[in-house]
Figure: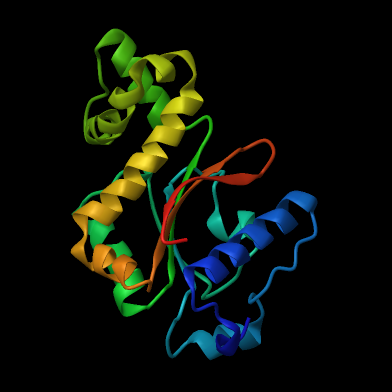
Length: 206
């Protein structure tokens, strides 16, 4: 995709993401923007059409599951897509400086961070080291659907995606201002590992 065809609205950017995921699911991959000519053209600067904030899980490689290439996605990933200052600053950079019209939060089933959080809820014990920080941040969202989550981990996955979307729009005045101006949309997506599909679970401005 040349720069002139870059989507400029949140709705267009989301459509491009979902179309790429459909190709991935169907096995009809195009592998756009992965050639040497495009690589060279990108060297002076980048204008990604979406900030993709997802879990660091190795099965969740954004450019693969959305069938995109170099320069398309500004990807930020942490275990359990938990938010800290550096993460929030990176996402703000993607939307305010790089002018990406979409922020997509991507969670998934069989998430290790979710599973560890649910284990901590059951037995009252959390991992040591900095892994504890991840569990504590996921816990803030899971507690709101505790009973449902303990019975079905998918409830925890979806609530954590919704929680993350709300956190981005509430904690960042930069994102909130651009959202109010219609310059960015924020969407929460849930990915199913076996099927390769994504579906929307939350969103603002798109």
